[in-house]
Length: 447
Image (cartoon, rainbow, N blue to C red):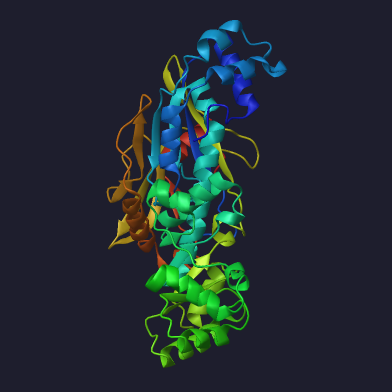
């Protein structure tokens, strides 16, 4: 879990300024994505359990404060800032968020924080990195799962992740999005995710011959064995397995013409009465290659997907931001908007209403937080923290996974397409549109 120093310096310089000014006004910030990555038609919210855990544990330690006191950039801060304010600081705000596993779209708040200004700002960096990264991975993984059309997908990407912590949470996000297992053992231990693994080419190469490698592996792992058969000659390796009377649970092919090789291997296995032995494939797969293999009719039972999911290789970042939308004044909470060209924001605290008909999601309406949404709409943001305390226990990861599967399946088929996907309609409510025009000074200027 990141600590309180997992923030940018300017958050601390601003906090020192708020402290000096005695400004502890309540403020609301919303985290959202400006634009969807190219080729993506929706995102899947993820990382909220870790975000809430981070806020609940958020404190500055004495060592943290000692380091901050040494920074020239904070030399203007008062001694009280270091001696009293920072030691006593903890998160006391409210958090509203879209539940994990729920599809979200550009411009919609995924999370809202309402807290004293300094608290709300100091947690910005960590919240962005937690929520955006896991949302990114879940959104990529769900595309691969959709492409697999019911065949199993295992997340294999820990070794290509940007560090062990990223690998851990990428595995969680991928499982949440529908992957059946992960190769990451720590993720299995930490989150209860099923783990899966085969063998490396080095195991085969370390033995005098391929058959010895297979026999010794199955002697240890028995009927659960998954044998990697493409180190030398894939089809010949399948024949060796049959002739030796080995009965592995599956074989894996990691290179070459995966469609052609899987067909040839299936024929060898079936002829040797190994119809129950599954064929798994891996090797630089992404949703498009998986979809092509499925469309080819290749007799593949499952896919191991690594780099493409864990790093979201085609779109390794989201245009996510965390923006001030309201601040407390004498008259109460006042809606605010940023008017910068190309980075304009919509003012005020918001709610997202999802409208469905006959089990299919039709549109989203972004409204002010205190207005009633469409009569057939369901609000997406729920309060997950109140005055710094979680309002409900985190659901089981399998329950989040079920929620994701159901919510994604409810999206229109055109929105779920891998290529040339339709744009999902997201509208502003009339009240929010009027507020946006008023705060932006555009009452008479049209859209």
